[in-house]
Image (tube, rainbow, N blue to C red):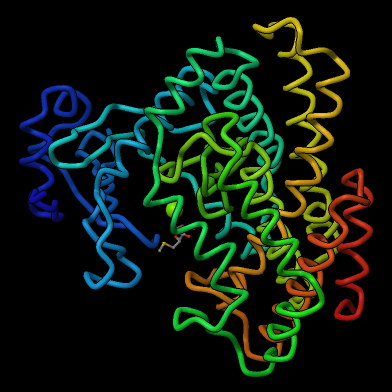
Length: 400
Ligand code: SR1
Ligand code: MG
């Protein structure tokens, strides 16, 4: 599978050769910057002299974070294009405008959001992003409804699920999120001062709980999910605008809806730990403490408002209540796993990695403690308020 990788000095010629892209920006006056700071891909921001822009994303044939020693099929860009197509149809405005896939060069094109910020960056800086958590709750709900048996026929769902298989990327999640943090593995690493907290994750029955969550991830095939919806996969506006847009959908497949919510929850927790050890101002901390509730309330509200449109009328209102309750508890468990992997496993996060050493250690301990309790208590904590209380307890010893 050989194909030419793009570089800043070849992008203009590439755009000139693709008519629908050349209609968006003027290739003759293009300025191109490679801004990929993720773990997998090349990302080019392209702006012409009159201010028009487009972003190109090209999948590399290997894991960028590790290098060519870890080959990875560039066909993941097809999964990403499927995610953008679904979101464009069912969650318009909650992803960047999507301009299509080049399956030969493994490139997708989308709206230039360079006046926006990666949400993780904004959180790291202590900036409030109004209605971002709400937007992501609605995003998850709308895609969940419209790609599952709630919004489609049973036959259509099976066909869509078959088309959306993404085993190589699912394997990364199975290994990095659910397995490696709980065993001795060369890809793990942590600060020596938290060794006791890391090793304690591997005793006392937590690994059995994680195994249940891993099994849920591997066998639940209910809707097209984003698959990697952490705060680095969300863009937030600057200035007076509000809301958020999801990006980086290459992990998309038919999986458990709770996994996307859990990814958000777990990364809110990491941001809370950072804010606590940096002693950020109260307004920001209080807002951060409410992000799980904001996402969940938006998710539940959107699902309930779409419910009267469900295709299968035998799915009752009582069933919806039960389904939401099980999505909630799974999301809390997944959130714990997603937080732990960022402290112990491969692919760390800047929230923690950019902290000075004493704060790094305190925040990492807080995340591990809270995440463990999330996983263990997920069946007993029925509401976002209950979860917020549990989180506050884990945070309290390091709050001044
Ligand atoms: C080997 S890829 C590491 C991580 O990057 C992506 O953002 C996913 O979270 C994946 O687990
Ligand atoms: Mg990503």
